[in-house]
Length: 417
Image 1 (cartoon, rainbow, N blue to C red):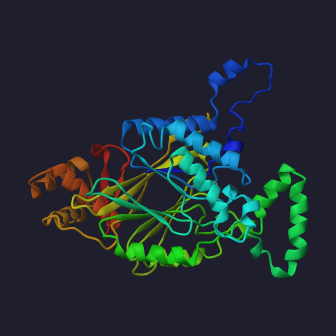
Image 2 (spheres, helix red, strand yellow):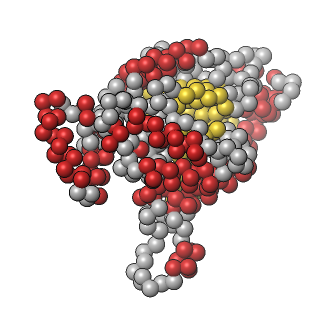
């Protein structure tokens, strides 16, 4: 899966190239040749990944536009559809493209209407026109991706119910604060618009119905499927203090608790904060909730791979961040691996116990040593079964594997008691 963060196409299209251009008379054509716009570099790389054919889903975290501008939203969708050839009638239409709403996608004029869903209608109309499916509104959207013996259930959720709604301005101040906001915005100052959308009285939230539906879906899914939840807003406070309390989820704790009590490991993918931490939460006796944030789209993206056991249970998640280095080249970063096996287990015909016993005895060895000593415990697909044993033990934190991102012959395995 590819996780793409906030697009903000109007501002991303104006972003500066990674050059120190002191001479503005320098040839524009040559400048464009030696330094590409960041957003173009990101989507060119993503398109190459789609061409290979190994991508099951492209997940966009919302904020396609700036300040609720519908023309910017439509332009963002067209850019995605054309750059990646996604959507109805295009070469990559078989790749699932999931999009959730972001707070910058909401038109504040529509948000003032009595209907809570009116502000989402033009967004879904634009998505239909671009052939890109729909965003979730009153109900979450569930999509199953991957082969039948290694599936992920992706749930798209709407975290923007309160965005732009005047009802969330305290009633004691609504009659005076509301007109003051209107008067300030009417002047059209970009700084005022930015301040409103970054610090507005809008209270993003999940609806109670969508949380209940999430719990129901999670309880009914086969344990063999990996649950992936996608929404715009983060469930955890940022590491860096964020002085914008009105743009943070008011019921993130309720969602977090529901996910952590679902009795299965869950991936929660989001954007909004424009940085890319990966944080793993758990409660005593519970399974992991892995929160994965995507950077803003012009800064890079995440490639997420779910590895399943041979019997079809989710084993681990690999997360590769793609970001720009100091020379402005988009590069794949170091792989981060998170365990997803949880309480699910699989018998390996005593092979798992034999592998762990050997590692406890030698304490440390190379892959070639492990293959020579423990390969005899398997009759078919020896290296694949042995690797699965290693990854199961890693998921239990029973062993560590140095050089895990390299080829297997470079692995150094060390047992823990």
